[in-house]
Image 1 (cartoon, rainbow, N blue to C red):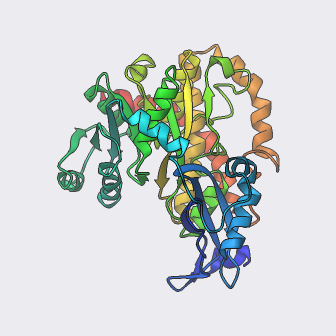
Image 2: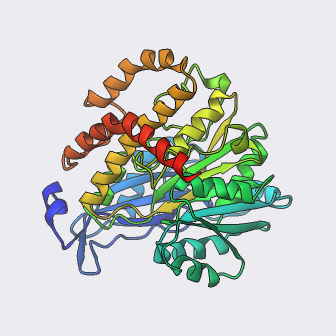
Length: 427
């Protein structure tokens, strides 16, 4: 099926999203779903519950057969999976004779699981919030609480949703801006592990369990970040966002640790953000206070539109801290469904990123020299056809979105200065 058909056809499902467990028989993916032609299938692939990768596979006119599905998974993930399976990808599943090591380790961690507070900052999105909270209260984790921060509410819709979840806490932050809401949560939960998720996401049932496992296995980690995968790919815009890197930005499913010891391999300043995203991040107690909290001139609801999370990660690393990337801690995100929404998002990404750099330079002027040394690499990434930013883009990707991203970057410094002025007026 051509890219033009996917772009224009209202009767086309760009990609069905599946969660595949290799120990169970692989399914047949039909070519039709709800009266729409299924162009592709995007699958999160697991082995005994452990997420090991994702694949995007074309669906033939007759549907995708299990043997074809297995071949596609093997082509993409065989290097990781074959040593563990002792052979090719199974079509009919596996016979398990003992508890897999991954599940045994998780069970061991859960026996002494630390208490975790999950924070959801939201503003007037009650329907999405209800879906998110349903996934959180269903976590397979023994010791946690959920706190909703209602940011500058104009109706009682958010509070009404929270009332439907008796175990969920509710807090109002009257000052508009995501960073104000985040900081309100930090102040309301001193000395607690804080796990953050956005209101347009759902958490994997074992999300908190895998966060706890990462904290246990990386005792020096100040921050744990997880992987964010698509909850749906119902529209071309959602598929284009994934082509641009989605929220994972090429991090994939390989665990990683970022610290002063790895700075020669990955600068804490660029490329950003390889360390994680605010939609799936966890901070140990005291870390956010140590870096001066979230910058209230950044984030949703400010002229900068984002990057309060990016700046926080960078400040942790510049301060000698450690970030552990744990790709088994999975959340599922509902991307923007329309092209105009995606365009605004791309502008916001560019604006927020450069605004975060502006904040860094204003607070630490000596960093300008390090940033200037990194500028040629950044320019190459923005303009080269095979850079990490563009290598995954297909022919149908609207190039205007890259231009929108660059326009946002040019607006970053001014947006930050304006946002800081507005933030000070709210204090």
